[in-house]
Amino acid sequence: MYKNVPIIPLAVIGIVVAAITAGQALLIDWLPPADSVEAGRTFTLLWFLFWCSVVFFVIVTSVLIYAVWKWRVKDDDLEDGPPTHGNTTLEVVWTVIPSILLIVVAVYGYIVLERNEAVAADRVEIDVYAQQFMWTYGYPDTGIESGDLVLPVNTQAQLNLRARDVIHDFWVPQFGIKGDAVPGITHTIWITPNKTGTYPVVCAELCGVGHSVMRSKVTVVTEPEYKAWLAKSAAKVKATAAAGAAAAKLENAPGDVAAGQTVFEAKCGGCHAELGKKAGVGPAIVGSKLSTDEIRTQIKNGKGAMPGGLVSGTDLADVVAFVESIK
Ligand code: HEC
Ligand SMILES: [Cu+2]
Image (tube, rainbow, N blue to C red):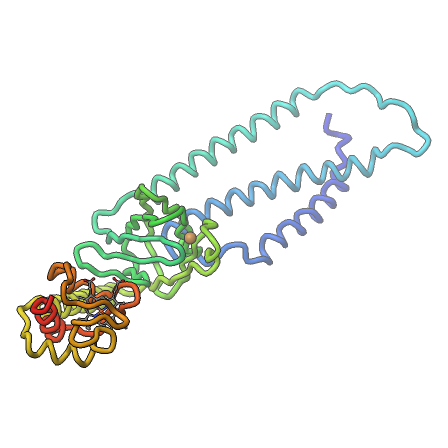
């Protein structure tokens, strides 16, 4: 039955097709280096699928090319071809082999997914906030909010993805994992980087005009470096909070009216004439109906044509006391 299979021409065509296909696969850098445990698994699965496809592509294409060349109709041949009957053996073979392959791929794919999403007990958890057009990373229990992501090597990182406006997509190509950040829900992905270095974080969801510049970076460091970074950043957060609390304490302390008048003359008199009795650029302050808190807030933040941030700390407390005394 197989005696008349044209082995040699088919083999020649097959070798040429295989060389072209394999050349494309090997000479082009299709994938970035796999720098996470998950990427290693996913990329291996991808290459497995790819080489299976190459084998079948070469077989099918070779037979097709041979048939087109060998049985091409002659110019003056207007006849219908001879009637042919199906080949049961061939049909069974080309049904059974793909079925087996499909089952293998399904099981293999399931195993990869299962392993990539297995949650480790010693993982680090980080909140990722996406917004037009930036990434922010929050480290729970430390108060740290950073514009760059820092991860310890060889430790699973659980990233809780959240969006503050529209849908974004967190993607580090070398980590082989992508995850959508969707407003209103938290979507979790797990990544275990296994090489130190710096990688780009890319937004992979068209999210607006600034989409293409929505980048940040992730730095993978050793465990001791990570601990040191955490401690340093947490200390910075504490220092900032302490400074803020100290400033608030000064601002909210009872102020001195006389000292406040001096501040008012220097900083406010240009717009509030005659110590607030007459309107200038700003209205007269005498007769103001604002509460103490409203006055403090307005002097801090400004309003309309009145600029904020002119005074702070003790000066603010004093000037508030002065305004209170004249209003
Ligand atoms: C550049 C001009 C300008 C300066 C400087 C300025 N103000 Fe004003 N101020 C305004 C204007 C304009 C308003 C009205 C704002 C509005 O309601 O839109 C205003 C409103 C106020 C009011 C609220 C009055 C009311 O009852 O609504 C207070 C109180 C006040 N200023 C206090 C101060 C103090 C204290 C300073 C100095 C630290 C200061 N301003 C400096 C322009 C100024
Ligand atoms: Cu985005």
